[in-house]
Image (tube, rainbow, N blue to C red; front, side, top):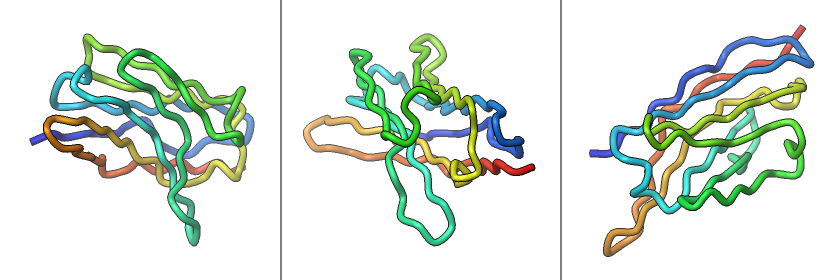
Length: 118
């Protein structure tokens, strides 16, 4: 059973920073990609940033230059460093992992709340 556990969310003022963590219960080498999504109230879930097993990265235009996704293979953890936070970044942030072993499997974490407000 694969588990993803997010942490690091909280309340931060505009312009501040947070670092989210997503710890996996298995080796993250087994995943094709790991992705951060977010969902704000009344909106659809959207991709924020993704990192592949070989280190390729992809970002939503709205976070380019402010957010950085990284991975620590030894700790089986993926991070999302969020700088210059804006009120529109307020959302529940979810970690997602995808792997293909015979068939494609997708796993989700429980989410962590990020609130950007003064």
